[in-house]
Length: 177
Image 1 (cartoon, rainbow, N blue to C red):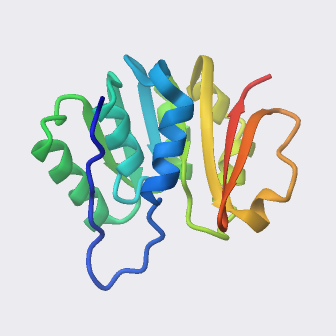
Image 2 (tube, one colour):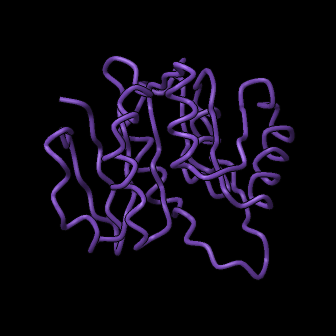
């Protein structure tokens, strides 16, 4: 069984990293579905979800993070854990990169959407008309958001497969209908 790797945030920066409990729950639900898959980690932060996917057998992971310091930390972690050949780090706005990656015809099997709490950016990405083009057949989107954001219904363009609440956060597993 794969071991969880701990990534530490930079000092003096307020982040809401995903807890080990929630990360383990997500990967327990995913099970072996992660093996050999292409991963997109939008709003990657420290990249812990994409890194865990690589650790559990994902074929490749693309990390999109707007903060240059965090993007460098992801690159360092990829190098440290021997995943630099499987990971690509993009420093930029996730909304813009959805458009760019879709325009290049890139597709992913699992997309982690982990925007800052209260930003509404996860829902904005889901409403982007180009976002579905990034998804392979039977792709899964995993959205993490603050419980108050999760009270709003997700557009009919998507099918909610499962929703779980962990403290103040809600994890929603979404597919195209």
